[in-house]
Length: 354
Image: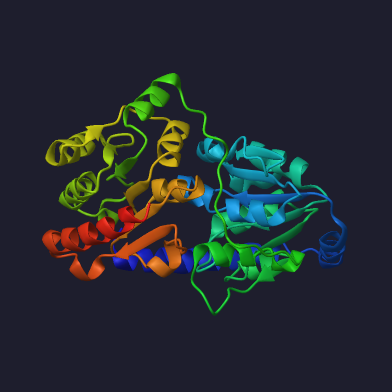
């Protein structure tokens, strides 16, 4: 889509959102929402994005709400990410088919049954208006108190719109801020269930020995991937630090992982499920990866994580704390050799502390 098509679509999307927001205004809803905000026993967290990392970024809210266990509604592809999470009462996949038909759509009907009399937190983007998310939350929760980002038409579609914090652009902190109407806050800790690893993966992990590192060079979007030679060099640095190194990969990434393994002398991991990848990460002394879903998974299982960023702000998508190291390589994007030098030096220091 060309830039002017994108601008036109953005204007149309926001305009249609305002029309829908005014059409869906209902007298008396605000009073009911305020009552539910004070007394509702059930909570529902809603995020219908289909990305693994986006689902994992909901887990700090689950931790902050404990011991209250909310129901969680996510894209059907993301049920596998959060099902079995100890802080969730249930994890439900949202059926997006014909959602714009409102109560006539199967997914909206199911969502209305779940949200009736509850407080619903629409965990959509805080930085810009997300039309589908705001409308699904409103259509799917007509008799609930809807909390959501105060962005464009979403300000009217939510019963309790929450303005973004001005002191941070951290995704974790901004999403936690959505809980402020409930007088809830938290440290921003990502979490995951106890990984369910197969015997084959358990045997592979045991074969790596007591101290090993995992390098995951893939990622969903090419423009956010650091060049493969940087990962090959990083794997060599980790081996030089005395760690066995496994190269993991996702769907369609085996050729990339194989090239990194051959260039570095590391071990190519077998194909993994999400739980098996989490199990490998969990036992690692260091995990090296791009700014992508596996980075958030590594942090969620408590692995010391080195995240490599290019063309994306570390302050927004990275994870702070002594256990992790987030490197912004954007300034050296034109030189893989310069990126490799920075990563190798950082890994030598980071691995020495593990």
